[in-house]
Image (tube, rainbow, N blue to C red; front, side):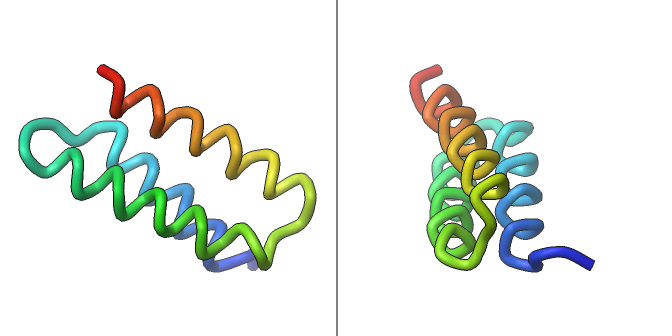
Length: 63
């Protein structure tokens, strides 16, 4: 089945990537929290993917 927290973090980032307007900042923050929650319970490969997702969120916030 996979790591539930990891999957939730990926989904939260996808939602944040397609958000606009006033909801975007809250969704980005929610996705960052999901990444943080998932990080401790993931494999090294998943941690790398979470780092990449974090970079995507950082790009969203700067645009």
